[in-house]
Every structure is written in structure tokens, then in C-alpha cells.
Amino acid sequence: MASQLNPKLPRVQDFDLAGKVVLARVDHNVVEKGVIKDAFRIDSTFGLIHYIASRGGFPILMTHVGRTRDKKTGRIKSGPGSSVAPVVDYLNRKLEAGLAAPDLPVDPDWGITGFSEKVMAPLLSDLKARKIGGLYLPNTRWFAGEESGDEKTEALAKQWAQAADLYVNDAFGSWQAHASTFDVARVMPACAGFLMQKELVNLDRVLKAETPLVAVVAGSKYDTKIGPLTKLYEQADRLILGGVIYNAFLCAKYGLEVAGVAPEDVELARGLVEKDRATGKILEPGALVESQSAEGRDPARCRVVKCSDFKAGQKYAYFLDVAPEALEAPAIREPLARARTIFINAVMGFTPMFWEGSQKMYALIGENEKALKLYGGGDTLTELKNLNPGLYLRALDDPSYYFFTGGGAVLTAIEEGSPYGLKPVAALLK
Image (cartoon, rainbow, N blue to C red; front, side, top):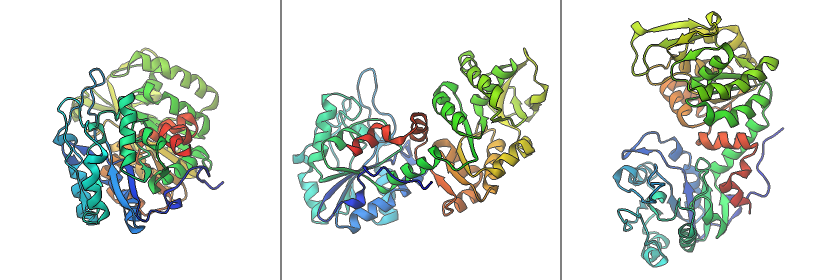
């Protein structure tokens, strides 16, 4: 069954952009301490930026960077470390975009409170006269009201709406309902950008996957993945676990104690163990790397432990990786080779110190040239790029691969069974 968009979703290509100011929310949250850590999310929006300009529109871009608001006090911390300046510089270098970044006054405690049509008037005049190629607003989380969810949020959304004719959401990874992703879409004409459309179509290819479907899932806390993990278990033909999620599963199944695994995670994993007794969907690699310390890697304090040796009541130090040779076992290799769809949201080891399991897993997945391989963004994509750079570069132009830009959004949509219930997406449908 071919994947497609909800026909009620307005798309940017459905609008005449000539002479229109287009406010585009992108997900360029890739800056750490003033440095771009990975430009993939920025590059993924080149199509929209070019399209707006080529169709005679005037682009205004905005994104969040980092976490700037203290949830208890409401105070906003701004500064060079969370500035969009590195992104603006990157776009101007890569695209000769001619973007200008307005210097708006920022209160040291409460952020930007003076955004108004009057403040924007000279900037919009330069934009429409094509003295500049576009505007890039300051970090949306510097604006009072972006995250507060009160009257300030509503006022900010209306102020942004007054500066533009059309709102485009191209930031599927920014799935929380904030002023720049949700409220502004409710007070002006709004539509989905090209990247948003791609993310939705490819999510449909996960939710309505061609079978056999193999899901590879890992995480550092069981409770943060239990919802999507339960959904994937129901849908997938086979499931491979890694990280603390797998350690918790092992503790619950074999009655072990493993360092770094919280008792509450073990309790949560018991339900999955009981389900799997009947179906046997979970594929176990069979050997793990045990380390006496999680602070560093000392070969003298590491060993490979076979799962066949597990007995109830045994205590182990930290399981920090899957033994790469264990992934060669037919029980793992053959289901991956037969799969028609593989969904990956997993770093198998405690990187960067323990990386061999992840590298081997990604290489095995890459051997299946017929399967659709969907990587769930975030750390998974970063590690694929770092550990298997040749595979990553080939995959960028390989239609059998898709790289999601937002891992959290993908997992939330999987848990809910549809991406159209996410508030920023639902706001576009209305």
C-alpha cells in the first residue's frame, strides 16, 4: 500500500507565494555552545528555503536552540551559546542566502518582549525591496511566551502572524505545542513544508510497514520508551533490543541484577517478558560486553558474557554493549536479511567508549539492499554517521533509506498510532 499524506493537510506548494511574506518554522536545533554539531537538519530544509525564494516569496525563518527557560521561575537565559548566529552564517555560506538576523532587545531575565509590527517595519521594508534575501529571527525560546502556554503565548503568536502572510511548518522534530509550532498556525493561513511532508509520508511507511518488519530499539531509560516499544512489539515481526532497555529485559527474564538498571525499569520490563513468552518476537544477540566501570573503558576490566550462562540471582557489573560477534549468529542475521522494512532507533552500546555493537548492527542492516531502512533520528543518526561514514554517505542518495530528523517526534507518533494527533500537525489540518 503506497504511503500518502492526509488529503486535508495544506501543503506549501498549494499556495501562491509571489509577493508574500512567508514565516517558516524550521528545526535547526543543532547548535551546542555556539557550534553546529551536525548540519543534517539544516540541509534538510534547503528545498523549502529555495522554493520560497524561487516562487517570489520573502522568507522569515525561525527555530529554537537548546533549553533556555527555567520551568520553575519562567526566566529565560539567552546568550551566544543558544544563538542562531552559527546557523545564519552556515546558510549564508552554503546558499548565498543573504539572510539578515535582526538584533532585537533581549531582557536578561525575561527574554524578548518587544517584538512588534513597528519593530519589524524597517526590516520587512528591506526584505520586500530585496535588499536582503531573508530574515532569521532570534532563537524562538528567547521570546517571552514561546513556552509559557499563557496569554503571552497567544500574544506572541499574533505578533508573528502580523509580520507575515503565510506560516509554513517544516519542523516535524519540534513536536511540542509552543507558540512557534502550534499557536501561530491557529491565527493565520498555515501549511506543511516539504520536509514535514516527507517525515509524515515515511512515518506512514513505519505504521503501515511492508512485512516482515524488524524493529531495533534501544535507550537509556525503559520508562521513556515503554509506550512506543509496546506499539512496535505489537506491530513488528521481530524486535531487537539494546542499551538499558535490553538490560532491564534480561533482568526481568532471567532474574539477574545488573549495575545501572533501576528496579522500576525491571518491573516495567516484566510485562514485555510475559508477552514474549508466548510470541518469541524478541531476538537476543546471545553475548554482551560487561565492564566493571561505566566511567571509562579499561580492557583489563571488560569481558564478554554469554547469555546462555545466566542463572537467577546472579549479579553483574555494567552491560555496556552487545558483543559484535554475537550479531553474526543466524538468529540475528537471518531475520534482518529477510526483512522488508527495518526501523532503527538504537545505539546498541554506551558510546563513545563502547561502539562496536552499534557499528556491526548498522553494517548488517546495510547488507539488506531490498529492505526499506528507516532511521529514527537523534543519536541513532549521529552514530551511524560517525561509526559507518561510508554507509551513511551512500545512504543519503539511496531510496531504500530514510533518515528522520526528529527521533522523539517519531516515537511519539508511533505510540499514538498516527502523526496527525501531534498538536503542531493537527493545527495545520484545522
